[in-house]
Length: 137
Image (cartoon, rainbow, N blue to C red; front, side, top):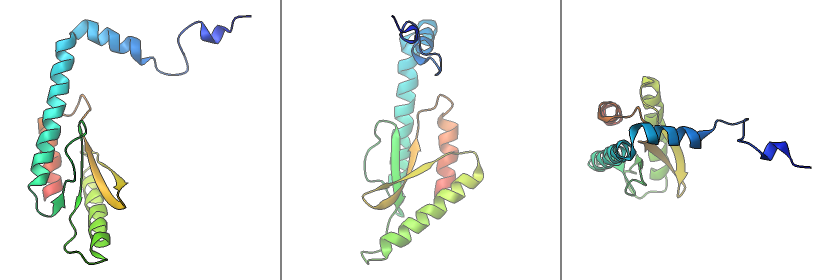
């Protein structure tokens, strides 16, 4: 007996492929290329800006549109990394308190690391500039 659940699209989850195909058909591939290029350029801009701040370390290039950074330890002492991580947690809370910019954090090589992900269709240069102002003040 055929299983009717396998005869059509999954209806318990949002159907993304047909929607993506519709947008591709309506707007064309060039619109998607331009949007992707904008996000990659914004990620590079975030990376370059944060790399120029001596109190922060940016351990790698964006991958592909996510920039990770953390507070640089003041010295090589055993507690310096923990103090830097605590400063990073305070920075993240200060950024979240603005409620205009959303950042997340993770742990990379046992260090608290903040992430800027430039992928939303609503993220443009003005919002990135605002985020960088919050981070750097």
